[in-house]
Amino acid sequence: MLPDYAEHDGAIGLDWYATDPNLRSLLDRLLTDDGDRAFAEEHVSTYGVLCGGPLARRAEVSDKHGPVLRRYDEWGVEVDEIEHHPGWLESKADLVRAGFTGLSHHAGRPVPAVVTAALSYLVCQAETAIYCGLGMTSGAADIVERYAPDDVRDDLMHRLTSLDPDEAWEGGMFLTERQGGSDVGANTTRAVPDGDEWRLYGEKHFCSNVDAEVFIVLARPEGAPEGTRGLATFIVPRVMPDGTANGFHIKRLKPKLGTRAVPTAEVELVGARAWLAGGTRGESGEAQDVRGLNRMMEMVNGSRFGVALMGLGIHRRSFLEAAIYAARREQWGQRIDSYPMVRETLVDLLVELEAGMALTFECASAARTTADAEEGRLLRRILVPLAKVRATREAVNAASQALEVFGGNGYMEDWPMARQLRDAQCHTIWEGTENICCLDVRRAIRSHDAHTALLARVARALDSAAPAPVLAPVIDAVATSLTDTKEALAHYQAADDDMQLLNAKRVTHLLADLTEGALLLDEATWHLARDNDARKALIARRFARRLVPSRARGLLDDDRTVLDSFEAIVRYGTVAWL
Ligand SMILES: Cc1cc2nc3c(=O)[nH]c(=O)nc-3n(C[C@H](O)[C@H](O)[C@H](O)COP(=O)(O)OP(=O)(O)OC[C@H]3O[C@@H](n4cnc5c(N)ncnc54)[C@H](O)[C@@H]3O)c2cc1C
Image (cartoon, rainbow, N blue to C red; front, side, top):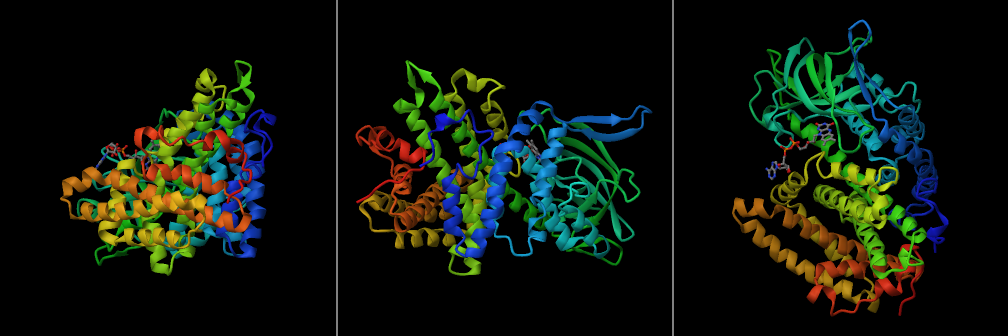
């Protein structure tokens, strides 16, 4: 059992790994190889201290002292420099040194995706803005490694994966234009052939981490067809080898609601030198087989998974801050966490968090939990948009609920929750809005039959569930929900386009609910077997009420879980079971 939360002043300064037994259990469960688990322990425990300490402390400051664009120097020459608070730069340097962008290239062993996800989850508890920049760096490195021309690849990779902050470069991606972010097919940025290379002309409307060094940019080669088919992906350095600007003009920094420390800009590209990422050139120099959007979507899918982790990070931070505040704040002479409704808020913050963790970490481990590689690929195909939708929406709810636990203080910028709520609202939008991700779930069903892998995964969780009485209501709820979902999917697939488009969000949430319920059942079974502990079973039972809603808002159930097991749930104690 963790110490009483009243022993702490706030989340900042704590070791965020040591205070998160659920994360430790996830690593134990998903990393079955001892070498992998030891590797995870070494790195994740270091990040627990780094993120909970200096990163979290500096994030409060860099949010209030955001980046400033210095467009011209004193001679009136356009320089487009961004000035940052020193704390922001120190935090990025700490993360580069800790291998946040270079671990997979320097670890000397494969880095399990679960470990990368755990590190990201911890960073996002401090500040999702910093994860935005460095996460895109890893995404850009993937594209560079696969598609950059031979003569520049090694140099770019060396920079993008360096552990030395003085030589490390960062990445970003420019898709969105003024006329549309969801409909990137409307992009008008042009690519003009220039020898073996290209020159880009156009305006990009949302460019985060704009002072990074390498960007992955969507543009339309001259003569290519309209729509998404004619788009190509380019690798674009911000400065030329001689240090001069590569046709980049920063028009302004966006006045954002949250994620303020990372600069997001409007950028005009005027003849920016670019390399085509993959694809070939025809006889007269035209781009052929560009399949540009596919290549960009490889990066976008990776970043959508990263945005789900941003949601989880904010959710976890919200819980931790609220649990500590509620343990310290008194009203009517009693700690407010002794009041049943406050207890319910804290328990449900954790129930939703642990459900979201189960779903999102399953994306990272899909290859391990499926029968074969193809099933793993399909499972990941549908889990990524499901996790992005669920984790980012729940983070907004969690930040809002946690802020209210702070009462009026929660609304104030000198307490920690206001920033979390402002930041959370970004993540339902960027890397594809909630609606667009729901349409992606529909595509995963229609074009890839990916739901079959998901349903098979749920069936496996049911097959291997412990036949313990404490889990019986969860098994019933997941089994009923599986039957209902199969019926609903058959109906959905037979419906006309309008009805499918209308119901895409409903289907997404139905699948997310079912999957989370099944994965919590898996986890509860695992904890019963390993630790003889029913805490996770209580979490799964509470979540399962969503799968089979009770009558009269549950008033007739007399469920006393929150009253009787509050300490064991929020302080991660052991729960005995029969
Ligand atoms: C802080 C921040 C940073 C960003 N950084 C970057 C970046 O670095 N690089 C980059 O390329 N982009 C970036 N973006 C842009 C972001 O990806 C887009 O804002 C997002 O994809 C939505 O596009 P849009 O703003 O044009 O909204 P629109 O596409 O105009 O959408 C408006 C609304 O209409 C809905 N909608 C649109 N089409 C449909 C449909 N077919 N069915 C149902 N609903 C629909 C959307 O869900 C949304 O609610 C950033 C955005 C923010 C807020």
